[in-house]
Length: 60
Image (cartoon, one colour):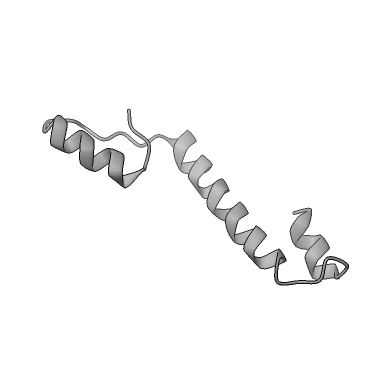
């Protein structure tokens, strides 16, 4: 089983032409959680750390 990293998929397909790429729910949720947290961190860096918006994003 491979993760969703496109480089891994490309290499796997090159090395193993008949490979089946499997994406399971756990890795989908993990990818979405990482993406959400990256977006949240980018957003809260725009606010003053004493603002209400900052606190809402920081502790979401």
